[in-house]
Amino acid sequence: MAGASMGGRGGLTNEPNVVPMIDILLVLLIIFMMTIVQDRKAMNVQIPPEEQVERQAAEESDQIVLELLEDGGYAINTAPYTKSQLDAALHEIYDNRPAKLMFIKTARNRLYQEVIEAIDIARSAGVQVIGFTPPDKNADEGG
Image (tube, rainbow, N blue to C red; front, side, top):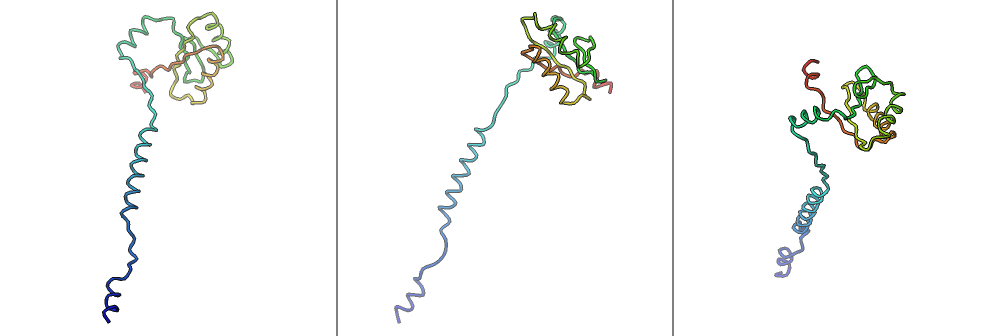
């Protein structure tokens, strides 16, 4: 009789031990958090102060600026060109130039595809460094 009463109290239970599982989950959480932080890529961008940009623009008049105009046309330093004339005009400018630098200024209504095509034309003409000019403050206020 004593054995029967002990069997009821000291029998096996089916409760899972969740402490090791929680420890493993916490370790995995910490590992994933560390890998996400390490996977972030950053690009350092240095933007000169506005006063310096305006002064440099006034001093350096030999810069080449390719404009994608609102009407669908193109201009190199305010001289109008069609898309078919761009390649020849850029070759004429850059073939004898040691510094192969150009800036692109686009109107707000131009498509991304058109900008990429202009960059491709410039690259085929030998331009090595292409920069983008910021939008005009006066154009934002007027429109």
